[in-house]
Image (cartoon, rainbow, N blue to C red; front, side, top):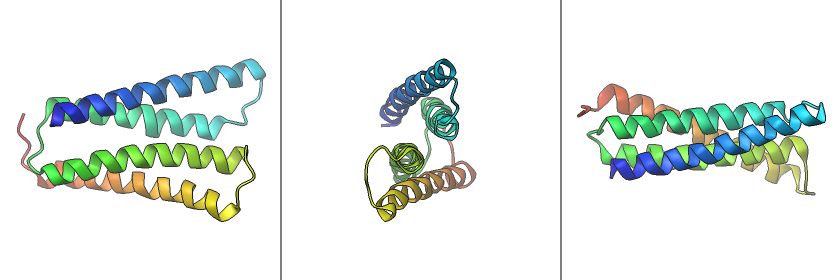
Length: 130
């Protein structure tokens, strides 16, 4: 089960890495840094965090499968939701109501925050088998 989580997080981290690199290349080529906050969150919350968690699940076997499942899905939903929500809110590529934009943006951020908190408790209170 944990290898499955590791592979899922690793693949999503790779996708975030590609998107972040393309966005960075676009900003450099265009000479505009309007996407800087979105670019930074895609690389840190998406690529870096998901990659680190992929390594964690490859190296360790947490003793609480329920917390691991909650963590992985909150991490995935949160990182995608925050990145898309931030892009929608800041760039406004579509005519969406402000409330919808904020729900996606803040909902993604809160879900990602939950994943960080669950991960913290997993590492503190779980007996980790290597």
